[in-house]
Structures are given as structure tokens and as C-alpha cells.
Amino acid sequence: MSQLIDSNAWQNLINLQDKYQKTSIKDLFDNDPDRANRYSFQLDDLMIDLSKNLINQEIVDNLIKLAESANLSQSIESFFKGDKLNYTENRPALHFLLRDLSQSPFILDGLDLKLKVNQVLDRMKDFSQKINQSELFGCSGKVIKNIVNIGIGGSDLGPESVYLALSDYANPRLVIRFISNIDYDNFYTVLKDLDPAETIFLISSKTFSTDETIANALSAKAWLSQALGPDSFKDHLFAITANPDQAHQFGISTDHIFEFWDWVGGRYSVCSAIGLIIMISIGWSNFHEFLTGFYQVDQHFKTTPLVTNVPVLLALISIWYHNFWNYRTEAIIPYSYHLSLLPAYLQQAVMESNGKNVNKNGQVVDYLTSPVVWGQSGTNAQHAFFQLYHQGTEIVPVDFIGFMSSTYDDSKHRSKLLANMLAQAQALAFGRTDQVTDMNRQFFGNRPSNIFLAKSLSPKALGQIIGLYEAKIFCQGIIWQINSFDQYGVELGKVLAGQIENGLNASNHHFDFDSSTNLLLNYIQKK
Image (cartoon, rainbow, N blue to C red; front, top):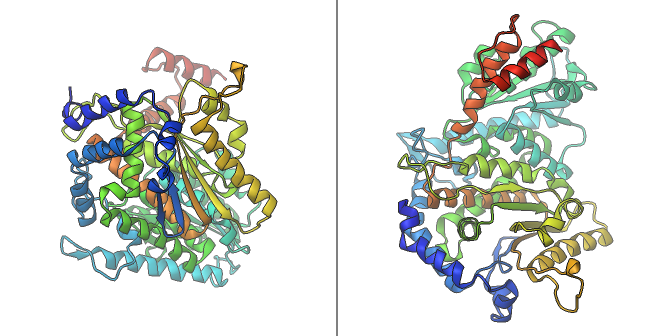
């Protein structure tokens, strides 16, 4: 048995789960008239309601003891000091610096990293303004109006989901597109109606060696060269990377390279130069508001006691369900068309960060780590899988995200949308069993949820929401004693893909893989 499971804090929570196994959310509300106020929190314009959870003060107190036994407060302090919490790669995780709006320097190993961050932000600002003012020209003298981001993972999901979320703030003159999939259909579909002379590519890759990104970047170079001439790509390719030397070797000039650093994980990089396409689209002032939302959450996370620290509570409630109630998945349901990609973005943030089975001591863990995260925008989700949420045998804690107004507001639509979100949370929590004789129509309820409610889907509100999830992920990693900042799990498949690609391109039909892979390779080659 591991040290974590053997701890008094863990064992006490096991006993509490047994004690409250037959207590319902309805019971908790009936026994505490002030419950809604007690478990609701305000962060600027964002309200977070945690009251529809299977928690009370005794449970919260013991969850806080679990966090204290994991030295969570000290780890938060170490994080913001720049200690090397990414211990497998021997480096810090400093993405909070990307949105640190204070005037304080941040000195690490004799270097002021805040100065470097601000220098890149200034370059991004100048570049985005140049495009928005129609002052950037391609090799043939045409004004650039098409911006295509090539990336994958955090270099794609982050910027694309944020761009879609904030598209109401976008410059309508610009065409913003994204290429991520190695499938050439993605590449062709994105570019088929664009004029190469009016198009630039932002090649976004931390290492500038990611196979899918480089393959698409080479295709972009060929597309430009075929249309505009062999050297035309030099005016139309830009790199965003932590490996500028590799980008330069690819043929991208130094003044076309926007740098970020190895202490920024890809899934935490949207506030770095990886977010350049967002800044181009929505402008510097709105991007600054986006950073402000993150900064406000970072300050709350850094300075607030654990018992009222919202991301800490979100993490602990998630652990309560996942490790003690055996709820294996969590859902993120934004009631906003513009947030349709947010569940996918947060899937990566959560599961790539905490999908680990080895602890900080190099031992295989004997407890669950990351839950599976999934979701879809409401109200579409209600007609897809909410049947399972309400009456299925799997209980899925849900995060509902809603907004009280929107850019194109029709009061009837907005009231219907908000009513649906609130009704779903209410139905999940309290169900319906009275005066129902048909068991098929009974809803037993007692299914937990959180509600995030903001005035509008503003850049600042979006930064706050994403910032809360980032901090939640951090807390869970600390308590589970795993490294939330590496991702070795994605590497083996890439190595094998290279070997199998060689097999696909080989002239012989004699493969030395497993029998299933050999069979499939032969089948593909014969076709």
C-alpha cells in the first residue's frame, strides 16, 4: 500500500464516504438553509457555485487535511517561486509568468524572465497591429489578410478554441484558419479558397520537430513555392517555437521567429507567442484582457487560504468523487456555441497533465489519477448523452459554464439557454421520485455539478475559466504525487509510427512487427 493511501487523511476520507454513502444532495440542502451561499464564490465577474456537491463542512475539512498532508500550500509557493516542479525534465513550470501583469521582475538563474516575456509580447503587439492596419505585405506586394496556424496539441487546441470563443471580438477583415491534422484533407480544405499571395503561416511548435506539424509546414512551403516562386516562403512563413535554431534551419528568417521557452508546457502555452494568432484576431487590448483574467486567478490561487481557494476546492471535490466514490469521468458542458471546442482543449490539459501512473518516487501508483474528461456544448449535449447523466448507471460529475448575456443577444434565446442549464443542474441534483409510479420516469438525482456563471463570454472571463482549470490540475497532481508537466506517454506511438511508415513505403511485404500489424500492413499494401 502506498504512502498516500496509507495516510490518516486518506483513510479518514474512506470512512467519510462510507458514513455519507446514503446521504443525498437534497438532504444536505435541507439540513443547511445557507448552503448555497456557503459554497458559492465570486472571482471578479465570475461566480462559481459548488453547493450541488456531496460535501459538507466535515467532508471539506477532511479534504483540506488531505491537501495539507500533501504540503499543497508549500507546493503552490514553490510553483510561483520557480522551483523545478517538473522534476523528470529538471525544470520549472513558469507559465504564470506569461500573464504576470505586475511590474515586478522575476529573476531565475541570474536572468530576468519577465523582461524576456515582455519583449516577446511587445513584438507580438507590433506584428498584430501591423496586420490589423494592413501594413504587412507578401512577396508580391499584396496585403496579408489570411493567417493560418499550423500546430498540434497545445499549439493548436489552445489558440483555436480561444479564437472560436472570442470570435465576436475578431477583426472581420482577416481570415483565420487552423491546420493540425496530418490528414492532407485538413490541409487542402483549409487552403483551397485562399490566395497564397495574401496568406501567411504561423508554424507553432515548441521543439520545431513535431512530425505532424513539420509535415504540414513542408506542404505549406511547397504550396507557396508552387504558386509564388521558390523563395516566396521566406516572406510568408513565421515560426513560434522554443527552438529558434531549428526553425532557422527550416528556412525561416530570425526576424520571423517568435520565441517561447522550455519552461512553458504546450498545453499551458496559450498566453505565450503560441497565442499570436489570437492577438492578431482580437487585437492587443482584448488579448491583454484575456491575460488579465488568468492573472486574477493566479493571484487568488497564490494568496488565498486553502479552505476558500476556488481551484483547490475544485481539485479536492474532483478527487473526492474520483478516488473515494469511484466516479471515473467528468463532463464539461459550456452553454455557449462559441465554447464548443473548450471541452477538447481541457481534455488535453487534464489528461495529458495527470494521466500518469508513476509517482514522484518512481513507483507505480495504486490509486486512480486523472479522470476521463469529456463534453459538448449545451443544449446539444442534452440531446446526445444527458440521458446517461440522469438515469444511467455511471454517475458523471458535471461542470456547467454559462453567461448572462452575449453579443447577439435575443432575450428569448438567452433565457431559454440559461433556463436549460440551471434546470439540468437542478434535475441532476434533486431528481424526481415523488408521485411517479412508472419506474422508467423516476429520476433519483444525487448527481453532482459545479456551475461557472459570468456576465458575458469576455476575454477576461475566458482567461479566468481556463486559469481555474490549470490551477485545479496542478493541485490534483501534487496530491496524487505525480508530475503534471511532462508527457512521455505520447512518445512511444510516435516512435512506432516512424517504423511502421517505413514498412508502408517498403517494396517488400515481409514485416517484423506483431502478427496483427503485419496483417494490416499487408492488407494496405495490396490495396
